Length: 248
Ligand SMILES: C[S@@+](CC[C@H](N)C(=O)[O-])C[C@H]1O[C@@H](n2cnc3c(N)ncnc32)[C@H](O)[C@@H]1O
Image (cartoon, protein in one colour):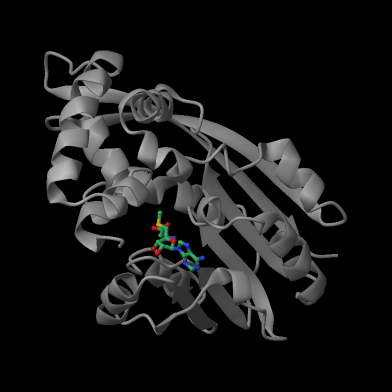
C-alpha cells in the first residue's frame, strides 16, 4: 500500500525531477494533459496551473493516493497505467517515477506513441539507482537472511537514457540522466527514504514483527554505507533517467 504521508515527507527531493521533466515539454495550449501514476496529486496541480485551459486527467492504481489527490481538487481516478489508452485529444502525457513499477512499460511507451495525435508530448522519469549501494545492501541482506523474500527483488526494471531514446525512436527525443546529491535529514534517513518506495513490496510481505526485524538488520548496513554527518544530515546520491518525446 502506498502511504501518502511517508511519500510526501520527501516532497522537495521528489518534486524537483518532475519540474525538470515538465520544463522540457514545450506544449503551449494542449487540450488534454494526463498524469499517469499521479500519486497524491501535489504535482498534478502544477500541470493545471501551467495549462489552465487543458482538461487534466489523472490516474493512479492506489486508492489511498487517489483519495489524497481528490482532496487536493485533482479529478483523479483509480486505474492501471498498463491498461490506459489516450483519448484522441491527448496532447501531453506525463508519468513521473511510476514506470519502474510497470513490467513491460517499454511496449506501453511504443503503443502510446502510436496512439497519440501528431505533435503530442510524452514525458517520463524513472529512478535509475537500482545498482546503487542501497539496493545492493537490501539484495545481500535478503540473500543472506531472508530467502523467502528473494522473489520480490527484481533486476533493474528500467533502461538508461539511450535505451528509452531507442524505444521512442521515430519521435523527436530528448533523453538524459541526472544524479542528484540529496541531503536527507533525520535518523536512518536512507532507510526512511527507501521504505516509502523500494522496500514497499518487502513491507507488504512481512507482518509487523518481521518488518521490525528486517529494518533492524538493514539499518546498520545503510548507516555504514551512508554515514550520518556531524550536522545530522546524510548524503544520498540518486540517479534518475528522463525522456521527453514529441510524436511526429
Ligand atoms: C513514486 S510515486 C510517484 C507519484 C507522482 N507521479 C509523483 O511524481 O509524485 C509512484 C506512484 O505510481 C503509482 N503506480 C504504481 N504502479 C502503477 C500502475 N500500474 N498504474 C497506476 N499507478 C501506479 C503508485 O500508486 C504511486 O502513487
